[in-house]
Image (tube, rainbow, N blue to C red; front, side, top):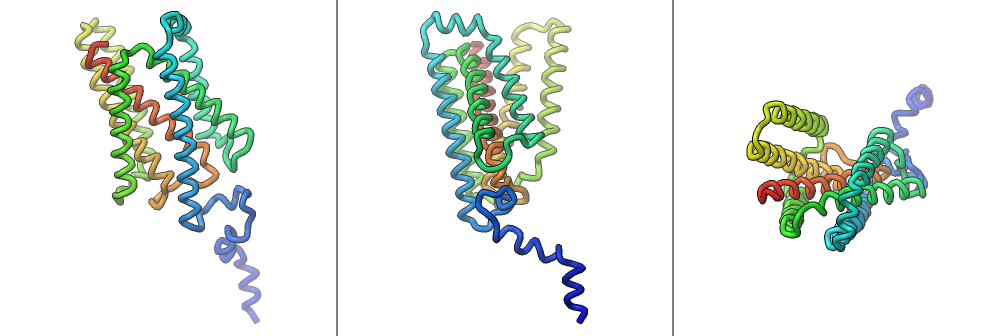
Amino acid sequence: MSYPREMEIYPQQQAPQYSTIYVEEDDVPAMRAFSTKSRRMAFVRKVLSVVMLQLLVCASLTAGCVLSSKPTKLWIHKNYFIAFIAGIFWIMINIAVGCCQVGRGPPRPLNISILVFGTICLSVFCAFITISYSQDVILYALSSTVLILLIIVVITALTPIDITGWGILLLCGSLALVLASLMAGIILIVSQSDRETMRVVAIVLCVLFIVLLTVFILYDLQLIVGGRKYQLEEADWLFACLMLFGDIVNLFLQLLQLFGLIQKN
């Protein structure tokens, strides 16, 4: 007659087997595990569709600024501080969503508003930066971004490579590269280096940032697609959208800077 007692003593050992089966669809705990492959694919389609809309908004705003009249471009150059304000807001949104988990859960007015505001902020930042470059440089950067993304998608879909455990390494690499850029800038200014030396150093740093962002995008996609050591949950759709959208736009901006430096633009 000890069997019922064992069930009383260890009730939580059997609970995980049933905890995510008989729950409501819209409940956040129900979103912590994907019970079927179809749910994972639905999550992937949802995130990629939202990111495509974000990129469309960013591309439309950027193209509008680049193709605008001279008075409009002059106004943008005079009010360049708007880009910095938008960039600061973008960073704050990423900290709130990524570190504080603000907006986590099913689509609600709060996280949808965060998504829209974040998309607008980064789109404004991208448009104000892009307007300083020639159309040839912009086309080179855009085509290179598309090519890199296609290669990343193929690697994610057709290879068993798993870098989802590289999160700490990528973070450390980002901090190290940022510190190296600051130190290089200070050294070049103090030593009063010529412009050609500064241009070469800037090109090297751009290439390193491009490589890092390429790995970041591969890391993002593998977390979204799942099936590897780590993966994002359904409740993390907002974080996934902002993360992937931000890395793609930053990759484009770094390529833009690289081609601009190569052409001495």
